[in-house]
Length: 530
Image 1: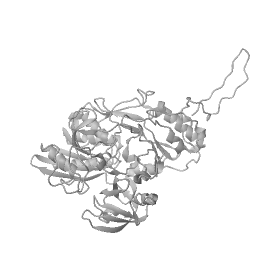
Image 2: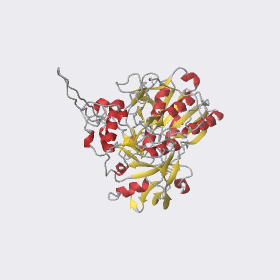
Image 3: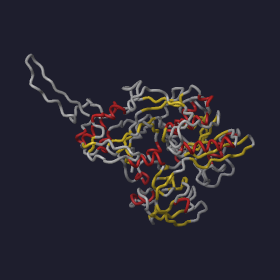
Image 4: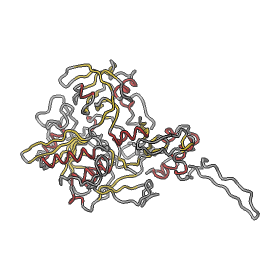
């Protein structure tokens, strides 16, 4: 299971009742004077002197509970016998070396912390942005074996229902955002927009049973059975039982073509930049090529991020070889201690290209990628559109592909990191920022859906609330309908077909109407492979 350090994303915060939390010491010795000095022993490797740091490699893999055997890829674990202080010293030195804002960390004696996770909580900046948001909202850990499973296999535990929390405080409102094929959710005919009224007989407004509600809605293990009282879109109330299991996520869903008087418009829901997405995206793009589409609507409203290389592949498949020739998808920048060299890999810094071939995520490497060769892209967005998803937007804008946003302001994460395992915990600390081919990457408060594009954080588009009364990919769903209308030259219109009580298309900020959809840390970040 993962452990979030950021306050905004802990599960308990769903119900507004609980809060979440949030390099080695130097040594010396010597003598002086005319006569031969008596030997002075050097300070122990684990001693702490504020502001002095040993190389993190001096402590890496020295574990209080070293693992034995092999990892999921068959490699022997690198662990050796150590203690908690060794683990803390690794985190201290590693953070000082690679953390983007290393000079904003308060250097505290690692020996005063008896838990590496607690110590890691402190190894970040606590500054805020101009908007008042935390400067670092993306500091977290994950069990290493679980991380491998979720990042490589696209497997998670649950019912196959993604819950959208419209209101986290009474009167709470939780609805189905979408479901995964072949899951308990689809077996029980759960549809987008269905409202959760009770869980195991507990009203979702319960303040006394918040832990039970959270544990039931987001089970930690397979084989758990819980009952849900659901109100359907037509007002019908029913009770159903669902048993948790390992869910293989469908990274791409609802790929289709909408015929319009001015040509075919492609659509795809893209939810995860996980390894299986490489194959799924290639298949989807080939399907759209066969349909001879003129435009594409890319639905990223629930896509929080993942592998940056897959983001680059997607951008290349959209723009094609001519637009991307000689251009960079993203250039990453580390802290000022590493202006020219990657501190994680040791390689000289070079831009991430628009990858034009497969990279061994889920396809044999070296195969040429198909391309749509589009000069314009419609993107459906929300506050859950984050990191690698934002990199697609930024990367394409950097090569003059016209990007039009339909939805609401994105999350604001131009940052990323390498997943770093030590002693069975995989640590994530912000290590770099990304800029596009034009040198822009300052969107810490998100890409703002605006009436005009300023080439920076304001992007042309229409502010439109999420519509839970229609399936994703339906031409009648609010955001997709407005995208089609905008393409037809009608601007940001409110259709006459909008149902009573449904959030309308409008020019008003509607971020609060998106709902919060829980994402694992992998799916809400920008990840590089070592």
